[in-house]
Image (cartoon, rainbow, N blue to C red; front, side, top):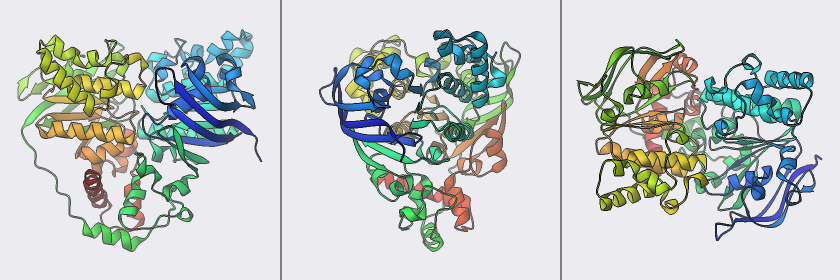
Length: 567
């Protein structure tokens, strides 16, 4: 029997600024060498639990503790933050907030430099760790020129070089494309197998994490542990749905079809799960066909656009596409493919070398950023690049204030938007007190409140739990039905399937597909080039021998959305 390495006993924690505890009577033991996944809706307490493990609670975030938390049999409240950092290494959701060095090698070496490790030994350990995280060929590269997946690997190297016993991952997939996410999960699994370190992960993308085996899934809701069991046992219950956590879509489809899910079916393994073909066929046949909507007038046209950065690297190559009035479209592709660059070109942050941008048939290629902002809004991927005010309310109101809107109208529109984005209770909070996901909602709110004609969102749902994801996307749908055209740059294949009938796939600065989301996510050539992955729904339909697996996916998505609307 392996020894306990993390042990909560009757543990309760309340932040000093709050009246109710964030964690309530937690009893949880994690053993040496285990790989554990922690899930729960936003505000459930899972981040606070992680902060207790790595020492940010109570040493950085003050509050009242009752009960016991031991790590390696040592009571954490009797240790200090430095001592805990030698036992627990944290890879944060936002890697930019974790970097110290200017290059990959400098950043990985930082902990060793603090300990005055001899230079030869330091070099040897840095190279060994860089090899382990597959960044050994980037040691001289600038941190700021790396992709999201590469940055995450550097963060992992920076904590592993200290040879900690516990690795804590805070939403490791939040900013990664599906294929890079699969690679990251494989890398974490490889490190777990080779080093036998204890792995604790917090992640919303449950189905993606389970690309590799985890020992247990711990579900937290309202500060309490509501489930602590194996993935197969968990999927045979309704715990995930009851706590606003997205079930894998193939599991949801089987439940809709009336298939009884039990642990012996191995429901956490889509490639081998036992399926009832007859029930899936009967259910599929009972659903109506999905017909594509008709196109309307063009609102935005990108016409043979080419763009290169000052480094000489061509980021966008002869790209053309048309967005129609009232559409919801997703732009997808691997990290670094040019998705964010094309959005910056559209809003005027970058100037094209060749080609034109048209808005409702009018050439806006030479228009200023301010002129374009009257028609097109952009919510950037990193919220820290957009925020300029101290308080949430002031940040969301800023654009309306700058436009000279009357105070009573500002108040009405800001409060309405804050409610929709789940931020109204925090409206007078300082933004510095928010999580990365909450900051993301603030930046979305600050643009939505302006009601632009075209809205571009770069990874709008990254770091959001299923409930807030649904709230934001449902709100965007309401805006869309009022005539606002919405373009989403996303790695979230669920979002593509559920909300954007059409998807544009980009690879290495070129458009490689412009088709329905279902067709894009079932085209292996496009999937490979764009770092996407085949949806598990398609795999389920193939295994069930459905004649048209793509239509199965389309009908499921329509039915699922209808069911969730009724709920």
